[in-house]
Image (cartoon, rainbow, N blue to C red):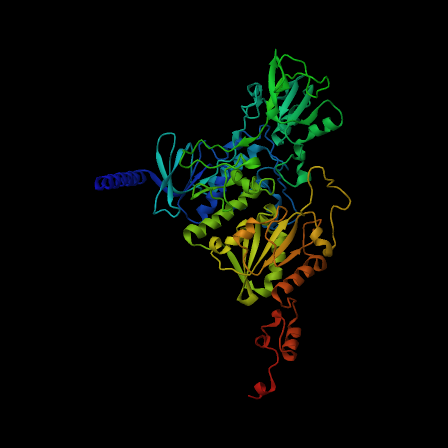
Length: 617
């Protein structure tokens, strides 16, 4: 028995000594970011500003290497709106979908392109300048692999992560931030004949190569329509097959759905000019080569047989098949100890993470950029630069408190300034505007409602963990979130119907378009309440709730339509008169009343006129 225990002890001691040796002989960093795309660079900027020990590993020799290839036809679909009529930088970021957050005014994409939808090369140059001008610590030609999780009691998360580059040089990291994106082409090899298809990643971008050809495109996302849009002037016919109906971004308000800049094929389809779009699941079909042509058949058909229906939509053969089935997360850089669990269903192409952007099975491993989109897929903009620049900042705030005891940045003020503060934020904030329904402003009521602490762009799905994740004690809170109406739109809905919007403040709760919603909780929601949120709700049912009526200009500063209803709501929350008064009115009330409104409490100490005996003394 003793010999067995001694053997175990010596084995454990040997493993510990090996670990210490590896850690001391490898290069160590507190934070290791994998990938120097927009997400990785944005996170690097925040760490640089906080003077943290970090490094960015990039396998290519340039930043933003994904955009040196994609989109294949080089036109971005992200808006570069250079003019808004306003000089407020924060407001202007609401309509700049390409720039990252920084203090350098020159690092805005509007200085790199005048096009509404810029050429991808402009973004590549922008990202290179973002790296060099801000002095970010990027290590190029570093293809990290064999990332492994090793138990370590001295690490804040209980583990450290070890990895190596192509040259076998070892690195050790306390925290790993994965910013590799979703860049692995999705190739469903289970579909017979898929090898006959040209992939989006390699298909020719020269329209002349499709001259006089009949083309079948598999997929119906932006990549598929991008290819179709570039060649439909050269082809005989283009047929497009996807498992679900076309979802138009302007109908769903999800920017990842089909954008108008790419949907020219819908015209030639609906105006009867040979091209067409139809629904079919790829798990039901096979691709068959017949001579120099290709046909699509159902799996249970004999390859040599005629179609059972002589009017089958895809009965004609094709000269070429193009696969445009999107991308997925690449797990090959991890070994078995750290391989990230993937999502399920429609989020299966993303790594599975919690609402603090941390891997569900790897403490201390976080995800930023496109790969973090599982948290708001088809709900908000977290899969795109104009969304994940804000979620990266939110993650940075979370880590600053968790690992360095730096509380979430906040502003404190007297309650008399709260109404003005909220109005200012809902009319200019870009983070809550772009990440609607995901990031919200949190107001902590302090000192019996006499003052407040204002936290900007906090992940609302962590509201039940506000104290432990932000470093701010909280009980009574107000959350301000921008959101669409529950039945705002969707495939099949007439989004241009006459009654699509309301301007009546009393009907604000029926607003369809993006509008502010204010939630008041007299105690923080619990974890169990968060788990029971209904499908059409963002947060647990609050004690008091207020919708600010939608506005055509998305400007909520109308004295009667927007400000007055909000003020009355706050008065109900605080049980106080929240009106503002002139000095002489405050003085008069102070001299004639026992109590005065909150705004006037500075006059006579807020006590009003004291009793006669007190005056005598």
